[in-house]
Length: 76
Image (cartoon, rainbow, N blue to C red):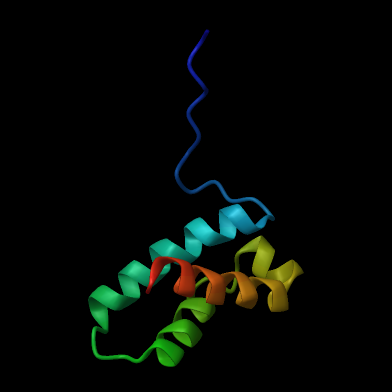
């Protein structure tokens, strides 16, 4: 079986999985730079940082729900 084709790391899609990856990366960067911020502050800042993601643009309410789910799921 041939290997799967490689995809650029910056490739994004209009779906929850792509958004979750972008959110997790932005969360990690934000937490590294602003360790003292509380979860609500962090969530708002990270959602603002990924505001240009196609999933956030198309479905902002659902993107926020996915973000909250990621926070609970990963214990962020």
